Length: 145
Image (cartoon, rainbow, N blue to C red; front, side, top):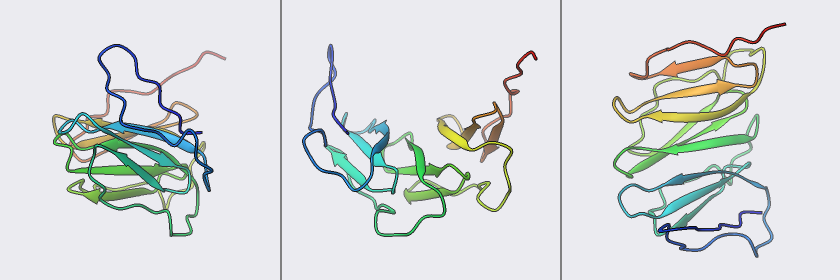
């Protein structure tokens, strides 16, 4: 429901917990510049808390739902990833590629930034890893049958 619970030294700046949403919250990213955070909904709507708003896909019809997000190392941008691997960039987050036009064996379930290169990794439900920008491929999850 977008509720945020802060513990320890983590600051609370607000949440969507008491609000009726068009789509569920599916991701959160910290703003390294302000200490704030962004929440993203499956429709790509962004909710900013002590963090700048750079844009959203909340008013765009998506092919697949958003499943995760990550922020740039300086907090001046963010990216969303959809379950088909489509990437949406805002602020200074570069677009380095996506799997949006590729038929995947399993849906993308999340992403992570490579802060050293400003690239990114995407992970699929079957353990597949997709790398973009300067992010290095370091292997994939292998399961025993």
